[in-house]
Length: 356
Ligand SMILES: Cc1ncc(COP(=O)(O)O)c(C=O)c1O
Image (cartoon, rainbow, N blue to C red; front, side, top):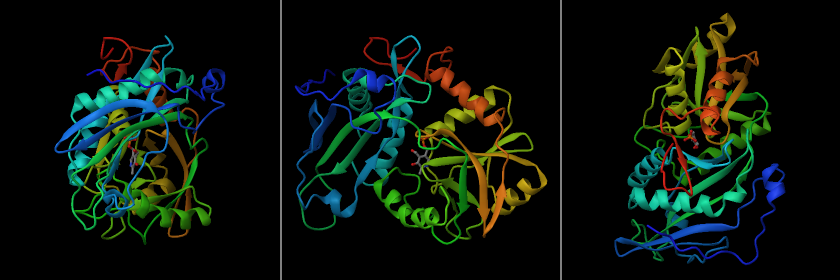
């Protein structure tokens, strides 16, 4: 597919500022947009970034048929620009769409939208090691209608902007035992807007108590950990990398899958299983739990420095030689092209080769 590009006549791009990460968390100059109506996708195009008209009765605004992805493009050491794991993000996007009763997006449309957008915005991709172009594909119900029903009309967009990770220093987190992010049979494993709205109030309360984030626990007994903020969780327990097994209350993180793959291939034992709050508290006290970290697109690997359980703080000593930082380095080496990409994760944009 060749997507028509209408370039902005008033670019805001400041190449030097972007390259040196002085310009972050600001939208880039363009956006991709396509419309779904009468059962088909049409009018796919790249246009200048600008507000879009939305009918006040648009179904998505009221009933939250809203699904998104968070992905990144990297400026490699050879100056080529590559998008990380487009296929896996597309797969999750469609799973979320199915759960929210929305039409799936064909792979070609998704990949062309993301890769063409990144190609147009290639000068917006900062230099590494931690800076990237954040990409936000999303879709919502645009049909104007009164009454609850799955919409017949949608908009699919890709927007983005240069980004530096949120979490730099070790996180202080609290185990959440009152509120829930997701319940069995609910939408926890979908990347839909409502999950994030539901998480905001408990997170605000935790912030007011001085915590960076909450660790969500299972909605039934609140005694097993699930995930944290916009990250999956992992621990080093007795030298093994241990992470909560995926359920329908946990988002299947692309970073999680990548970290587990790298960990296994570098000889680490990986366990995907239930992890109780008691196991963590006792393990930190007796020295068997040596590391705790969040894993996700935004932060990549974010160290956790303390976990508070029922008002008792359990402190972890975050050392530079920790296993989590070794895994992060291996992951970044692939992303930024310091080493070969043995898994075919990087999609070079603007060249006929799809993957390296
Ligand atoms: C709730 C939640 N869990 C986990 C993750 C990590 O997923 P990924 O590694 O695909 O970014 C995210 C971020 O997308 C998230 O929003």
